[in-house]
Image 1 (cartoon, helix red, strand yellow):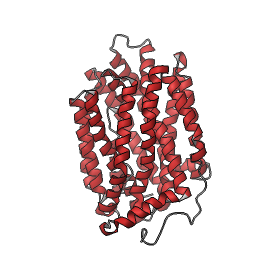
Image 2: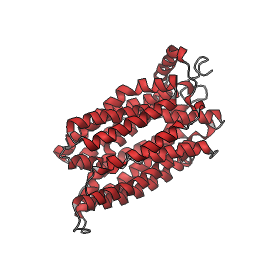
Image 3: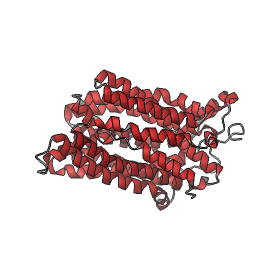
Length: 415
């Protein structure tokens, strides 16, 4: 695996992208603004629905007109949304902010992965997909670890969760500059005259048994992970306020200390997990078995995180949440490699966007459900129900080994 200047740019992108200082406190921020869990779930659902509507067209635009411009537009959309969250604290205006955030996600999701895979193809490193993507993703998780400490310091200093949105603008401006320096070759094969062929190749993905199963396995796990992971924040808040430490500080400052430390350790672990994903694949004798086993473990982690979310057992719930984060980052490089084995490189961005579209559609449905359950029955019960639902869907997500002749490589789309 070559660690050249472009690897540094890829790693820098992931590191800066994950300096989302609001992320460890997003639920607590909304609660501070007086929102119910149902309203919070509704905002997350709006975000996912907007991503879902924008995912396919932005993915196809990236494939047909260039991936670099898509990534630059993504950063701009994020920056505008951060300003809106900071300057317009209102539930209905937050909906607009979420749509802007979704536009950034839609332009980004799948596109940057496609650029990495294109680079590996151009440099003859296609056999290093899991190892290379895992290494770049480890820098993303390292960014999240640093993010946790900076975010905690910002909340501790300001005494409010709101400031984190304003400061998050800085790393995103730096990332915009980084992306603008990517080489033109990573745009992929731009063929404006072959829109019909590209769209046709895209829909072939859904006719291939192996690519469809790969999309299900990845999207189901990621959607449940994405839906429940934010609920670690109220669990940590309850734990922080129950501890007989720093009682002279405000609730926000006490929470910021616990959240900052836990998320810092958590993301150091996920960085290590992502970097060593290829070893997990090798241990299980292939990506398929590793993805199947980790899917089941993830569902069980969510179930028991909910069941242990009470009193002194809450520390066990936190540990299970950490395990879920580690499993997600262990799985992601393998998911990307598995899916890329079944999709033509010319439609990689739109193909990975299809995976994200399935994920966001399900997450949009789950977000208000878990919010309603959390309001009525508590966070613990809501988590347990989510885990049981995820475990049931394994019936449709179980992967089989991909034969050598299965990847979609027709003469028109792979020439």
